[in-house]
Amino acid sequence: MARILITDVTIFDGSGREPFAGEVLVQGNRIAKVAAGGFPSGTAADRVIDGCGATLMPGLVNCHGHPTYPNMGADFYSTGELPVEEHVYRTMHNVKAMLDAGFTASVNGSSAKTRLDIATRNEIDAGGIPGPRMRAATPEITVTGGLGDLRQYHMHHEGFAVVCDGPEEIRKFSRLMIREGADSLKLMISGDFFVHDTATGDMTVMQEDEIVACTSIAHIHKRRVIAHARTAEAVKRCVKHGIDLIYHANFCDEEALDLLEANKDRFFVNPAIGLTYTTLYEMADYGMPQEKAEEWGFKRELDGAIAVTKELHRRGVRVLPFGDYGFEWNPVGRDARDLELWQELMGFSAIELLTMATRYGGECFGDAVGLVAEGYLADLIVVEGDPLADVRILQDTDRIAMIMKDGAVYKEPRERQRQQAAAE
Ligand SMILES: [Zn+2]
Image (cartoon, rainbow, N blue to C red; front, side, top):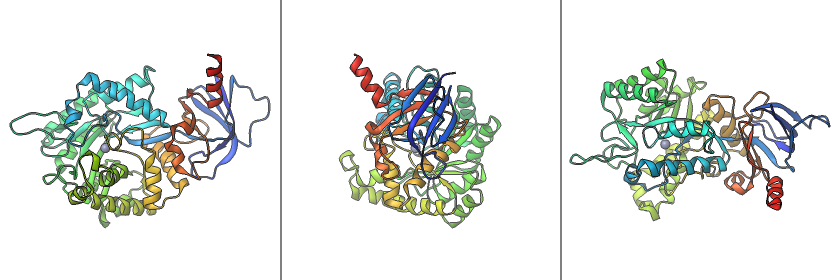
């Protein structure tokens, strides 16, 4: 097994402890040893990478990735109308953009076409295209009239969701997707303010027997269920039925907060504030002026998300940044902006945020990722500068000097790039 020694780095190991100077030895696809200070001179390695004083940290983990969202408009029709062939290429570009941005793992939040997530995960795992390691999701399973149902009574339209009503339809689709290779099943339990008027973000549209139809199948087959759950009632249904990755949760009431706190070792909450923020303040050029966004409920949604996220963190529930990038005004690859938004809007410290972005993300991903620690998978990034002094550094892909996934160097360190350029 090849041994790669990374020298002269300041290590942020993801655990939450302060960074320290040291060296890391990678053997095969795992981290063999982390040495504070450094290894004895003459430590054997097939290759030495000089970190030149940069920061080495775990690759970022996105627990709400949407690489199959093709960065299109808010009417959602364009996504459904995108033919599958073009959609595959868009997705390939997106997974590359995620990895280029330092995200080495992604729990995907849903797939915009039935098998697109699954096929993309398989192609990445087979080494055919670059991308993060992924948990592949089903499309959004929604109810008639819920978020993602774009049909009209007189005309069929494809969207980014699959409409299922009643336990029978949901059971059948859940089984089908498990057969096809999905790691996670995604339920739209609440509505959303993008569905103006009929299934808004403060309505709980999926009924309990429908939820149970999915969770009972998923749990038999040891698959994860993920929920779009904005309302307090939707969050309570998640807790009750063992849906451990909850998106949004922005209208939690006291009872929902208490339930999450009482089960904090089981649940992860991903508020996905970036999409709400950009929809409210930065979408005017894409058909949503701020007054309209406020009227539709996005200001309430953001205020709720800020209050709930801070409160959950205070109570020790693992909250996760990133998520819901994949739209024209909030595209894939820009997820690291969440770190800046979370700091500005909620006052989290950089070390808290980077711990959420790595260790918590890894715990949610469910494999040995998210820490620079012995035995962990070698998913590492080297960042020029100190992201703990300024989290915005992570938005600049130029400053991500090296990216390693599964022990293989995906982005060569700058010195090596220069040597290669000189040799050509
Ligand atoms: Zn989402």
